[in-house]
Amino acid sequence: MTKNVGSNSPLGTAVEWVGRIMAAAFMMVLPGLLGQWLDRKFGTSFLALIGFGFGMFVGIGCLLLMTKSIESGKITRKTRRSEKSLSDFE
Image (cartoon, rainbow, N blue to C red; front, side, top):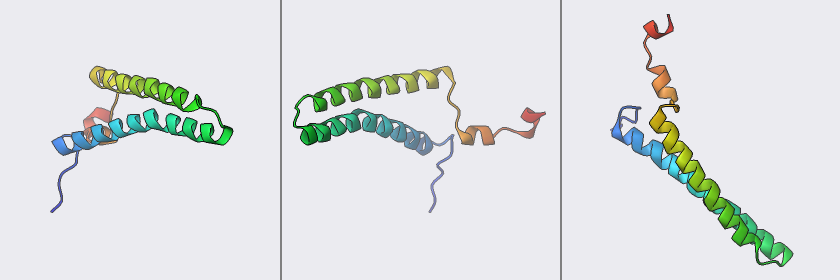
């Protein structure tokens, strides 16, 4: 049985938000992991802290921008564009 994952379904909206949150989570964690790797490579102890701080700043900023642009209607999905009727293009 196939579920509807279109732009109007609750499942489609949930999947969209999960993707956005996962992207922001990766933006928060990856700079810190890179800093930790660099700390091990160079024998320092501050790059991981800087990486995680930078990642948190960028990730939270990304989430704020996403929610602000969705509220203002600037983000459109491909499925929403494909649902336009022919009269919209005339």
